[in-house]
Amino acid sequence: MHRRGIEVPYSTLHRFAVAELDFGRHAPTIPVADGKPGEEVHIDTGWMTMLEPDERGRRRRFRAWIFTPHLSRYRFVYPCFAESTETAIEACEAAWEFYGGVFGVVVPDNTKAIVHTADPLKPRIIDEFLEYAQARGFHIDPTRVRHPKDKARTERAVRDVRDDCFAGEKLLDLDGARRRGLRWCAEEYGMRRHTTTQRMPREHFDADEKAALKPAPTAPYDVPLWAEPKVAPDQHAQVARALYSLPREWLGHHLRARADRFASTIRQRVSW
Image (cartoon, rainbow, N blue to C red; front, side, top):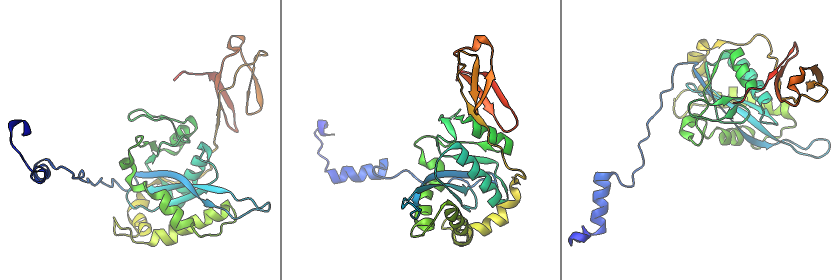
């Protein structure tokens, strides 16, 4: 318009842009449906606080796996020291016991303990956790990288659990932290009216979700060991401190090996 010789005050231009072009306005917030009862549970993890000094005067900081059902928001907290595949499986086992069943879909953040390679369509899941999911009968649907709206129900879970559950507590050890987490989930957070659902998470879960879960495991899960041993010049590869004799043509090759308390399986490594 300036090139046409028409002078327009900035205030007039601003009013036009706001009224006709939605200038300066945020995108509308579209609520996501909660889904079916017992269908999805979100998992997040993060640092919590420090334990009390041990006999040597040292203090350890611990993490926590946080489970949030998509419908009832009845949270479960499982403290641990390391964010690993083993603790992820251990936390899931404790969660199924807490909830009294298994959810159909687990939605984790892209933690390296569960997701090997992130991808919007075909993420690669860690072998140990994928095998565990198949054994327990649930599907894994990781969130997209740098898309916080994919897990909006757990986006502030780490901060809330750290500040509301563990802050100010004197925790002597990890077992004490886990007992505190259970009490907070069931008696404090679980019996506090949720601002979105306007229902108490524990009562909401018992009424609408618990009956829809798959049956809880009746036997402990044996976490397998996956490794990539190299075949030595003596035609042996070591898996879980055991030596296995292999064909000469495999000399110098890295293999894929799986071991549990019953048996070991070794095969040539598959390139991804």
